[in-house]
Image (cartoon, rainbow, N blue to C red):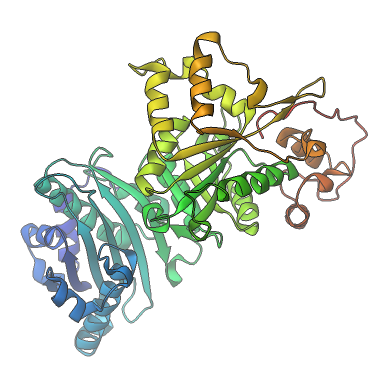
Amino acid sequence: MYEKNLGTKQKALRINLDRGIYGSFAEIGAGQETAAYFFKAGGASGTVAKTMSAYDMTFSDAIYGTEEGGRYVVESRLMKMLNREYNLVEKRLSEKRGDDSQFFAFANTVVALNFQKTNESHGWVGLQFQLTPMGPTNYVVIHIRMRDDENILQQQALGIIGVNLMYGCFFYYTSPEILLLSLMDDLTTDRIEIDMVRFSGPDFDKVDNRLMSLRLVKNGFTDAALFGSDGGVLQPSEALYKKHILMMRGRLRPITNVHIDLISNGQKQFLAEPDVDESKVVLISELTLHNLKAGDKDIDEKDFLDRVDILCSLGHMVMISNHHEYYRLVAYLSRLTKLKAGLLLGSPSLQDIFEEKHYEFLPGGILESFATLFSRKVKLFIYPTLQPDGSVYSCENFVVPDHLRPLFQYLIINDKIEDIRNFNKERMHITTDFVLEKIKRGEPGWEDLVPENVAKIIKEKSLFGLPSENKYEETATQIPQAVGNI
């Protein structure tokens, strides 16, 4: 049962009084803040076998080895710390108390706010632990960003989330969703952001880390989460460090041949940019929380996983975000990498960007949003739309209010916006809604509107409402005349 009002000191004391939970703490970067809570709670001898901090790089490297690239606040360093400390606990204590103890190793490697307050404060926090004496080990690893503007407050928040992690792992392990929620007990998102979580080990073999990441965004613990093309969860700033990001946003339910045309031609143009290094480009398909919802209904988690599986099968990274406005998305991407980024959009999305009503809450209105959207190293590649009369709607004939036309022309002249060329006009009638309707009705021919391997996956798993017997309902379906929300 979730004990929402249980305080940090009470959690630490309860662990201390449980004589079966025993292990070590290794904390680098802000101080031994998590271990300190256990000492202050009383009865720490029942929990703490050892605490340590190897702040000097030479000492740290001698204990845990060196890191590629010389970075210390990375997941690989955390895992080395956990594995070494856990192995030492097991090696030195298994004979004495292995039969009645659940061993653990807690570790964090963080960079807290410097004296000048000019750095990004973040860190990795993790626990390797047993749930039964002599049992297998499990891991829960998180990445956090610390938002307090004082170093001492960041240290305090780091200690709280460390205690929450330990308590959750030992007392909420049967419900990973509750464990996840409990990580923010006694904290707010103004103090801590959790942008990655990973459960692993035999006792978590049924946990889907992609759903846990979705819940991070849904619960407001972070604004974005990232998966690799293998479906594994990634920490965004680490995965996209020194990368060119090429991103496409959409509902992608399902991804269609028009998306493939957009990606293929948009990618060619992005790679042709003089300041883009092809070897550093990553392609990301982005799903916003808004696009994951069906009207007022909550997110269908199976539908979400289906979309992720299909996108990953095409070799895409997948991002879930709560950045509905494009300027907020660009601000977020610019925090992850300083290299040039590209956004692949349909012309209706560009039209939406120029709608001033979206920016009425900003003091500077549309100009304030554009200062963020276009001041960074970002370029928009626009896929044209097929009009009802058969003409193509693109940047060349883009309709914009007269008072905004000089702004639009400025962006075109300064190479911030560019039409996607060499598009396949024969595919432009395809919309996601049109394809989805044909799939739901089991109507022959939908397979020709999506990539071959996508059609195969949809058939094999009966995705997106495809009838299991795939019977065609005799109802006419009108071919759409324009690409709306692609």
